[in-house]
Amino acid sequence: MDQLPLSIPFWVAGALPLFALLFTLLQLRWKAVYSGMLAWVLALILGFWLYEASLEILMFSSLKGLSLTLFIVSIIWTSVFCYNLVERLGALPVISRKVKSRFGDPLMVFILLSWCVSAVLQGVAGFGVPVAIVTPLLVGLGFPAVQAAVGALVGHAWSISFGSMGASYFAIQLITGLPASSLGMWMGIMLAPPTLLSGLAVAHIYGGWRAVRQSWRYITGASVVMSALLVLVPWLGAPQLGTVIAAGAGSVVLTLWAKRPPAKPVQVTDDGENIMSLGQALLPYAILFALTLLSQLEPVRTAVQGWALGFHFPGRTTGLGYLIAAQRNYAAIRLLAHPAPLLIISIAAAYLYYRSQNMSRWDDVRVIMRTTRKQCMPTTLSIAAMLMMALVMNDAGMTTVLARGVATASGSLYPLLAPVVGVLGCFMTGSNTSSNVLFGMFQMETALSLGLSTQIMAAAQSAGGALGSSIAPAKVLVGTASAKLMGKESVVFRMALPYALIITGVLGIVTWLFVTWLFPSLL
Image 1 (cartoon, helix red, strand yellow):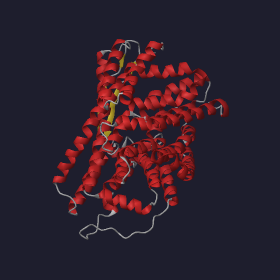
Image 2 (spheres, rainbow, N blue to C red):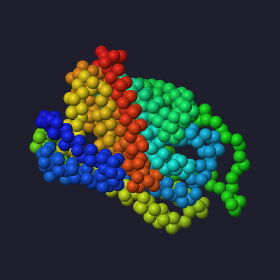
Image 3 (cartoon, rainbow, N blue to C red):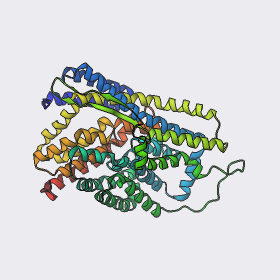
Image 4 (cartoon, rainbow, N blue to C red):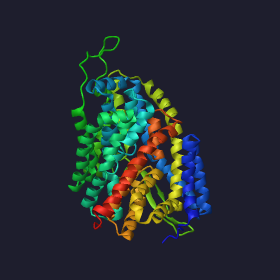
């Protein structure tokens, strides 16, 4: 049993790296890499000096951060390369024209892509792919880059708990051992407010309260359908399809309600030749979607399960008795189970097709790679610094002290802050799945000690972790890289933060009402 103290000095010390990160990003407006490096160094010093983590532990935790960096930035590099490919070949104007010919209202386009299409991608892929793909598509359609990045970050947050084919759900269900069907049902119920509010937030990001007034009926109607499916599908025993089915239904509802613009003549290029078709323009993404669905088939998963690049880390114990579990195949990049290999295959197949149709030249690859490297290298360094900070804090016990401190200080009001613990875990690791692994059992033990429903509290943990994804530094950096906003991470973060805090606050109130008033006897 660990002996981590819960005194105020330890709380303050545990929060100091996070405070330094946020203060330098938001107030001083440093570049993310400098803020991350400062926070990492502070975490190292405090971890060694106050939390009694050995130099070996700090070294391994930093290496874990680099391993997780490889896991994330491989998605960024491949997705940005894919976007640069379709941009260089002139596919973006084609996509823009086709979308605008179907939807007469740019607001509906923004809501559909940011809130629903991104969630479909989250359902089948996850791990930053929705932000990396939807953000540049929005930019290509003419939306401002910051608006596009924030819209994608905030818009898809509701879908993460059942996204990545249910990865976050299965993580917390296995950690807590709670009944699968009832836990899935309660997670769907707890996600109803974030589903509605994230849609309204996307409208507000686009055009303020005027846009909200124009679209709230459509958003409310779609969210009712989506929320009902988020409850029904997991209850029927298919949680891995919860996000895909709900987001797909929401996309259909919004598409049916959208107004069509007046018909216009078909556009041609200046030399009179037919422009690229929509299918050709979307080919890499269509292949990616098909491969992702194919990869979920059990025979395919079994055939490639041994193909993985991962790292092993030993278990250790700090001087304060905090146990760090051994890790095997940590942050493993698995063939056909990780977005990067799927993106590489999709890019290669699409490029060979483009070559066969004389749409591209061999030297395009060199130009695209140079552009991609220029765009992604700053983001890579920033993510590395922030994830090393996060893993040092996790392995030294700082994150656990912060979470326990929140529970101790709040007492009977803890349900109001339970989602905040989920947000903290995702903010630190960039993953709702990791947040659930880190704090799932803690939430259940806290619920038992307070006589509260373990199922509702576990659901609040995962829902909070999903919301934390919209402001997690690793995800913010994916958005800025995809929108070519390198160096403007603080701008995106400052814009996304109020939406995340407001939705998390509402979720906390809902959690408190459920466990203390509406379902006090449910355990």
